Image (cartoon, rainbow, N blue to C red; front, top):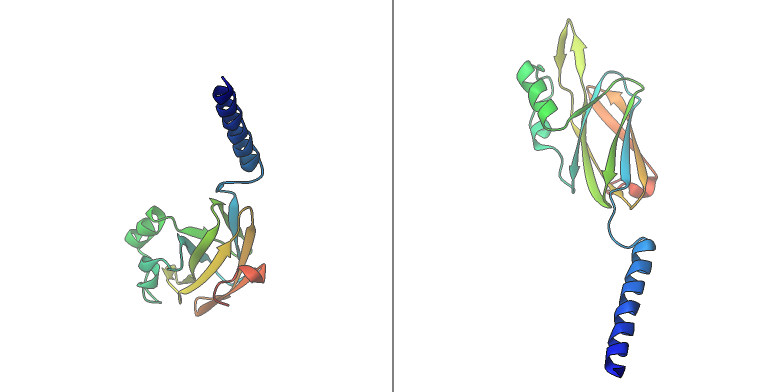
Amino acid sequence: MKNFLFALLAGLSFIGLSTVAEAGGGGTKNNGQIRVVNHGSGTLVVFLNAGTTGNDDLLNLPAGTTVTNDIQTQFNTTGGRTVTGNGSTSFTNLVAGDYTLTAEFLSTSNGTTTTGEVTTTTIHVNKGQTVTVTYSGNSSGATATVSPTSANVNP
């Protein structure tokens, strides 16, 4: 009987400690976010990839490529986002870790839209953190400013 009570008490202690650890923030939750802001001239397109590698489709598309229906469809199906001038978009429900934004400004002339110079920015998001990446520039090149600056992996 004594062994039974000891085992029961040990089991209840384990359950109680597990509950305290879980309530104290244990585990991984998808509550980080990255906010992308466009302070450049023109429309910004941006992709988010987990890790330190950018979006290969966009990286392999030369600047000055005409944006056709096929390219637009590929952009839409691979999770690209369009951010108009002075607009923003947010990638939410992110776990803590490194993420790479691949971005470029588009150029429109005489009704034809073409791609710009591509840039990548790798950042680290902590649990529950919001990181803001503000892009300025134009189709000749984009400059990213990361806030907080400590989130910038490759400043």
